[in-house]
Picture 1 (tube, rainbow, N blue to C red):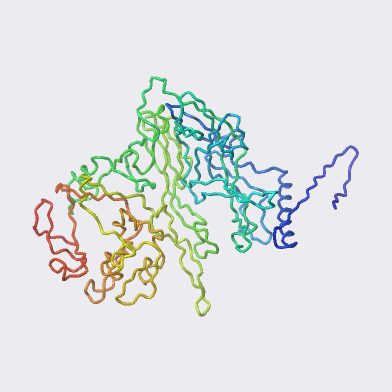
Picture 2 (cartoon, rainbow, N blue to C red; picture 1 turned 90 degrees about the vertical axis):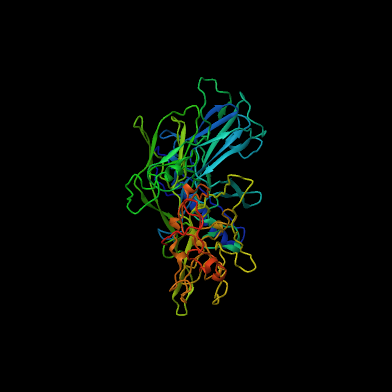
Length: 627
């Protein structure tokens, strides 16, 4: 039954009537379930009408520029600023989907997020220039050769696409994202169809798409697993591929025919000098050759020095090896690199709040949030004075191109290692009915902040130094000296072994600091932060100092591990050398838990009763050291 009107039509007037018939049927739950689905379909129809039948477009595809080299192609990804195809400049695409509607019962703060935002790129090699966008899923027509996306915890994205033959929503993998940040350059040296090296003077065809993401609520098709945050009413189509600016690009590898002689290759790092600041941007750092010699040449610190003295043993400026600096600067166009000096400056820091950092529902105090300092940055050409501003702040891992200089710069803010508290979650109630909470802890730093570690020997055939590997399964428990993981041991008796990775005593906070056991595997489990070392209260062989009230170690309980903080955990180089002119004076502590077995009967954590070799290479000379 359909009715419309009444209408009053003047002579010659025209009135248009738009008719829409929503239809929906639930696969289970009976007639009432179908009514509920019909309401959802009706809301979507109304939203489409209210939006004048405009559908969401998604982020426009980027422009590709191809640098042609000998059996190699370098591809650059850029977005236009203002024209009729540019809605994703600086990856800032946002678009409201009017079909995403919220129930009237939800408050303003609870309403569904209806905005798609930019998420990533996919680049395809095409078998011919005639391949259409609808054929990109056909492996005979197109092969995915590159993908990148925002590093926000979103990697694999699945759409539930309705199949009329099955009368069901079929889960379909749309992208398996790397979740490593946006990259604007990459190289191709291989034909994706034949897996053979690229051939000079042969045409290769490519296209690019951009995609957006929205997951206002997780869709869950399982009727037995419906929850408040994942249910039938969730987002079936979180992946939205852009429809505009999709073009075909041609690349033809060939040798360099100009008079230019290449002095670099794609990806080569550039030497960097740190003038001010701290941090590593998540990069593996290596100081330049000669830096340690320069530091040692300054001599030994004495109490008459101030930090402003030239002789103070510190390097005011620190040079890094090319490719191992706190910011990633690399060659992206070998034919366009120019000589010069440039300055990278971070502007004033501001605090930036992250939301939904764990995805845990109903978070109390803290609201499932975390904060970090971020900044814009700029590049200054010291020869010309020209300034180039960053496209985004360091909160995003973004490779920014400077094609007129043939380089790119990538830097990001990193989180400190160890746990951060994102709020509190209720775990129960006391006998009196008072809510009881546990802290909601999360490791925000990738790989808990650990970047890498290696041990090198001058003579690789003579590896004369080793360590005691951590062993969680040691029969006595005495080799479990690194407390990474999630093991909790309740009610440990006095004098008993405590094998907990999570300390439940009054001196610690009751949650795992390294739940994925990252720091348990550094250089074969032989190095670890002091913060994670087992204490002498937990095992006799613990290397974390814990005082006892009987005076054997200390006059009162003293949990030294608590004084170590994650913020101070830094990248370090430990160099052991036979060159005594480079030695650093340091105390040597006795670590045997049994004084009767220690040389000179020294108690653990006190100075060892055996004089070591002094700075002049002399053995057996007593040196007074104040500790």
